[in-house]
Picture 1: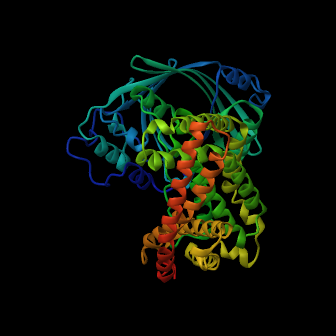
Picture 2 (picture 1 turned 45 degrees about the vertical axis):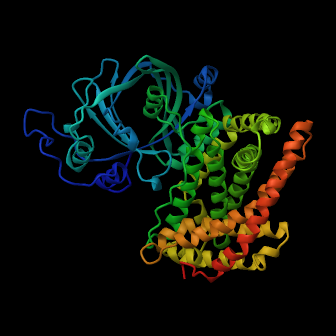
Picture 3 (picture 1 turned 30 degrees about the vertical axis):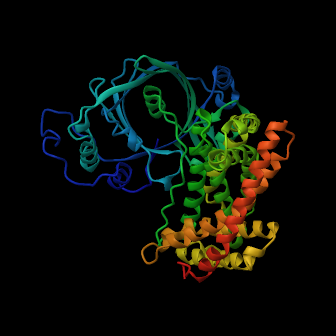
Length: 549
């Protein structure tokens, strides 16, 4: 457990809970006497990487010299952890876990965990632990503003035991470079009423040293053992088991980039924000066929590539280009699945919804679904491999050590301490001028040139989304961003038609081929409609004032 380097506890929790820092209601003040002394608001930051695995993978991890380090393991401990929440799941909705754990015959410990600000990274969690007398939580033991905020959130609602985990835990300590890492092997089950599911996890927690060493070690572990990165907490897994609710796709949350933030910190926040966005959609893909999950993963990777390209232009860091290439490879591997999803959606919302008997399209849709099924198998196999986990951990280590600083000196190094708005204005102006160059006579351009213009628009849009918060106090960038998105979508109509034509040109039986002809005609019509709007939208875009000027 690492002491927090973040904001004071009250600020962090206000952001997490989303409630006002007002005095606690009457009846919720800590008792003046006759009670255990409330805990202070001292805050700790837990930094850990968790892997999930199956029985064979768990056995391999236990036996691995990499996770043994030659030292004796602790005796297996029986941990019973009970999670509490209101009947309305007020805590879970804010990604807060309140639990009481018994470790053998030791006194129970009440723990509060929450997801801190996004700038602290995907593997960091806020944590407070307080000894208690029995297996029941007592919010009065959380002192100061921390306790007031919690009690305000829960109010008069009763805290209920919602689910529990029962695991056998083995602990080991591993030294890696200057870091001391605790390895916890947890095997057992989650119990939610009458529902149960197996639980096998290997957790790497930083006890001392630098987080970058933990992340690099985690990358080595993933490359050596059949373990997969899993950011879903035990509390959330338990809640999903109890409710039957599947993980949902997650859209990007803009990084907090106030105008006074220096460029060095902005680089870290933007990279971590896109890595978080990428990983946050893994659970949805593992649990369902929701097409939005793969779409959001590819968006995250494209945004990361766009950001790294902007940074590399002024900071000649070789790792920027290395990670760009890896992000491209991952996105490319997911491309066939996304193409199937996009084509299915376009057919369902287009000709299938408006033309004739749906049975006429059945052979074509069955062929598309078969291809989609295989493409999804490939993406899930990719996620189960070491490649994406290793990529995420190495990028996280790079950000933690601010690896780009080693590539600059003199004036370039000084530029890292300038307000992010200075870099943003120059970067966005350059991207805007590239769009104007590539978009000249946009409506008459051939397909290849349109594709290049669309890429330029996409990069400009991502750049605007990154940096608009830096200008928010004086200028609103939302209208400009909507304009770039509209042009990007209009140009995308040609891409949609090309993707559809490629799939529809594959050998099909006669009924599927007939439906394919109808779909091809529908997309050709859509391209013509898009072209009619394109010239008007392009003219309006050029007349608009960029918000960074």
